[in-house]
Amino acid sequence: MKRKSNKISRAVWEQISKTLGCTVHACRERSAALNTKRKLTIASSEVPANGAILATSEVQRQLESGSCAVDWSLVSHATGLGMCECLELSDYDVGKSRWQYDVNTFSQSMADRMTGFINEHYPKPTPVNYRAASNFMWVDMDDCMRMHGLLRGRFKWTEAAYARAAELKAQGLSWKKVARHLSPSLRANNLYTAMTKRSMSNPTPKKAHISDADAALMEIARLVDEYTGKYSVVEIANKISDEFDIANRSCCRSKIGVRIAAHPHYRAKLDAIDYDDLVRRIAAGQTTKSLAAEELDIPYYGISERIEHFTNSNYSPEWTGEETSKLIEYARGCSSKPDVAYFSTNIGSKSARQCYDKLCSLKFTGILHSLDAEMSE
Image (cartoon, rainbow, N blue to C red; front, top):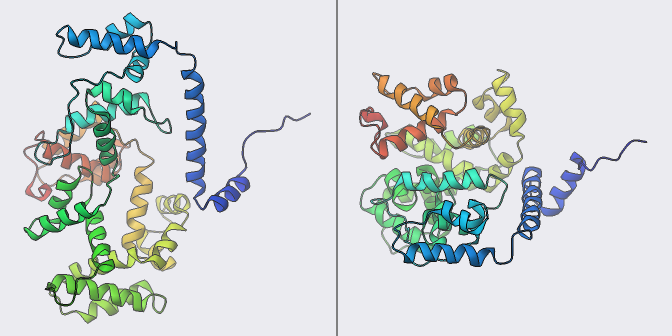
């Protein structure tokens, strides 16, 4: 007699997806995280009841004896528990430093140290134990949680953040530099989109001064709303572009593309695409991003950004020492701007976007001083 499989079928996952209002991928990831959490709960019940007391006491003893840092191998030896268990159990917080993000004092090496520890001991979908991360870094736990969120791109927009971004922009800083002041991983295009949406939802009062650039953005948003559903994406872009007498036509069209991609009608169409199949077709040479955008009547900007995100998710976000060394060697050997697409194809384990971001990071931290001016901010 055939044994019944416990594997959930695709049809069942689709039904769960409809019920919860989430994608199938999101439902599967959530299920895996819950199963992992359940296993961790069962495993934690096997830890001796006095394990936390023993670990905390040993940490306190070391620090009060004049040690400048905790030797977790000694804590492990004294308690009879694993080093990671000791990091998770000790709740001695006296003397821990604070870690607030500041563009002028931010240390990428410190951030890499924390993310490296988390990725090694709590790989996805394992829930991160921030108590362990806090003890490993000897930094306040809330600050570790906040910084890890920023490093993963989870920037929380608040009234203060909007006000700060507007203040920095008014000082003449580029979008890229403003983004760097707010978060180490916030991208300029995401900042620009957020600020544009903000200005659309909270238009400036009529009596207040509106700059020509802001007025143009508001008019673009109005025309996109008016033309959506009546014309194709290409026709909308052409019609709106013709409305403005702007010398830099490509800059105008990029703003139009961003606004179209942010419109709810096109966001819904972009979210409904099977990117797994689309990326496979592009790789096989059956279509291109431009042709796909035209066939599906969706903005090229939106589909390009999502394909890039989907492609990046298939590569490890962490860089090994060997990969970094190869990138540094390649960049220093280039007589002109490094070709990240060429390097990505040759290394095979990182996307072109990841290579570009890594080059910027290496330059920002001072490791690469000889990159072309084209790579500068």
